[in-house]
Image 1: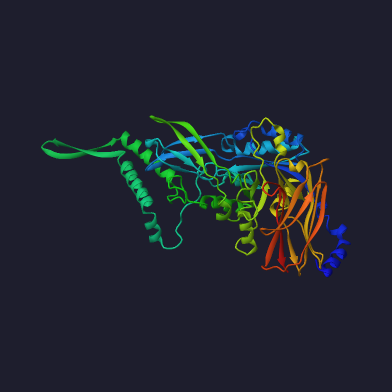
Image 2 (image 1 turned 180 degrees about the vertical axis):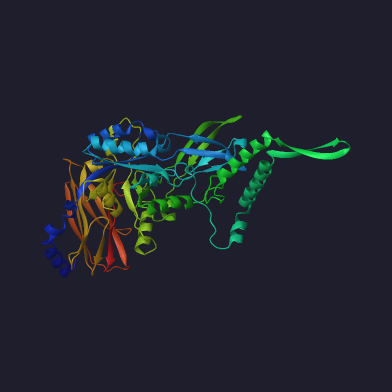
Length: 513
């Protein structure tokens, strides 16, 4: 380090007590994110989950039962009319009002823990194969996102998804003829349904004629006849038309293959418009099972298959973040992975929002209750309340742990400082840097006696710039004298071994002033 930088650092440390204890201004809240209750297939009631989380030292728990676990397969061309469904327990069956009220009531009982309601959204799936060939496959049913932070019941009720009424319609944006031509088959079917409906409706009551000769004078009389068959057909066609209202083709349905990130972006946009938060859940999990089903006149099994979806991190935008632990470190959270890619896009202005990482618990049916502390998110909140937690998550002031690391070590400070102006930034924040150098302060301590040593890795963008050995405490400074090659960069910390990390912070951004 150059002599002038050392002098600046020594001078700067005299201000350390007033500026470096950033984390002490916040409540550090140990949070479990993603609990499934009996509402959607878990082993415990919401009240029991609250008691378990409370007994294992959590300050907050975010309950995210499945919003809707219903899938349907329709017979063409009457896919909205002639269809069978598979449905599992979910908030939709339980009742969203009942679900939210129950969590609110439990909050009044367990005053030491903050329960936050949310959902595990299942917006889209699609079918491959056919029941006629006994090769029917249900895909993407386990591509999930965690949603919470809404201020109204209606926002939860109206989450866009296939079982909840669809993911929007294709609407004309200019040339009407081009729009109709592109969706010719759909509008042709609607026109046919309407013509058949009108024919059937006018056939319900028909006027018939009978000729009679009276006094050698030919007269024609008429009478009205009622047709039950025409009435039945009219009602059927009326219902078919009702299922097609508002007579616009759907943007996405379950019969035309994989559309990529489009349907999920519709959900993300909806959550953002309603001031909620949304995280990609278990993005690196592959799910596969075979399940028996009973169709009319045809019993068979279907395959339920969902490939891992780390690519969605880059294919979608404006979501709040993703779950890094357990299933998010193979190709997303690792150094140089997809998370670094989207953070670089934010730094270069391609994205308007940064992407945050959280730890995902996915606690539902284990006999080892201590698992509630196996994967946690430590949130630095300005106040110990639901509003304080929401503000902190939106700001990215949090770090994630797994393998009970949060029970063994504590991150007290991870901050960046402008050594000339004494401006500083904490986890998730942006430091406006007047000029280099920038100083990074790291303070991590062990809360276990005789703990095994581990390594603290400091990254600048995707590059490792410094390592520290942690046994009892790391309280170190790193001074970066390099000029910013772009308008913005970021630092983040990983803790563990080179191949397996158990603590990950969100980034601190450095922007040219």
